[in-house]
Each structure stands twice: as C-alpha cells, then as structure tokens.
Image (cartoon, rainbow, N blue to C red; front, side, top):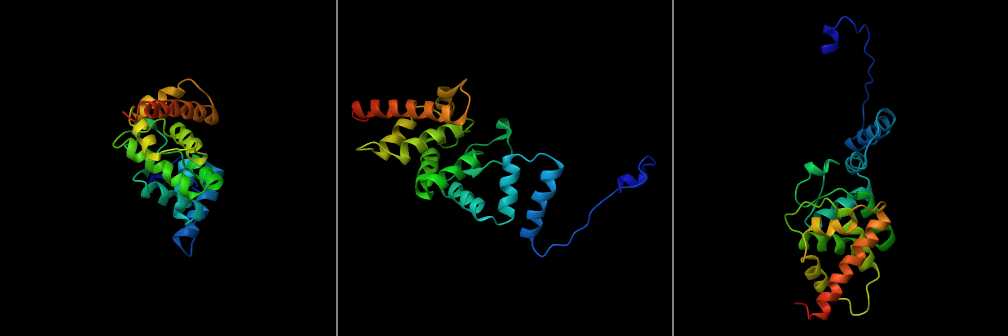
Length: 190
C-alpha cells in the first residue's frame, strides 16, 4: 500500500503462494529467506519447529521439560532468565549421546541456575555434557548440582572468558566444574 503512494516506485514485484498446511508454508519460508537474508540459528530453529521438523521438536521438548525455554533472539541482553540459545549444541548432544544425557544436562542447568540469565549457557552445557556423557567412577549427580550451585551461571562463564571455540570453552568449564565437584567430595559435600 505504501509503495502505491510513492511516485519513484513504478513496479513492486511480489510472489503469492498457496500452501496445503502451516508446515509446508514454514518449509518454504526457510528456503525463501535463506536466499534473501542470512538466517541465524534461532531463526532456522523456530522455522524448523513451525515446519514440524522432528529434531527441532525434540530439542524444544527437551528444553521445555527441563524447565527452560529457547530464546527468541540471539541478543544476549534481551535474554530472560532460563532462556537458552545453543540449539545446535543440544542437537549435537542428542545425536552423540542421546536424549537421556542431554535432558539430564539441561535439567541440571535449570535446577542449579534458577531465575538466572545464561549468557555462557553454551559453554556450561558443553562442559556438563563432557562430564555426564562419560562420568567418573562413583559419580554423584546430586553432588554435581551442589557443586554447580557454588557459583552463578555468569561466574561459571568467567572460567571460559577470553577463550575461543566451543570445544576449548567446554573443556575449560569441564575442568572448572570437576575441580569444584572434587573439592565438594573431599570436603564431605560441605
């Protein structure tokens, strides 16, 4: 409508499509918008959810069941407490270690960091996946939550400050969390 009121726009191309379902429309949205503008991972994730993609729906369910939610934006400052944006890391964890390990990690994060923004959630998630996918002998998941609660999510994130690369950051978080876990164990959990 606004273009019709401007004299400098003689033609305005547009495309009109009919779709059988919302899922079909969402799939077409992904294809059309990837060609038009760069989509970030969250745009892609939510379009996949709308398209009823099984993997995306599983990730959404795992996050929701843990008591968290997927952030709608990549802007760290706009995230609310309990919002996570590392959907690719979650997908990789489900593929490599299965939904049980992934669910346990997400649940531990929700329990350990209630009402906290998780600006470093991806690194914390990666560190916890390393711990829970191949736990040490006599590993106590309850002790792990206690160890995590000794710091805020932001304080744990500082353990990876200045490090580049997801694996490097996850390894740093793994080491820091396990150090605290072992200190908890040697102090009798106090």
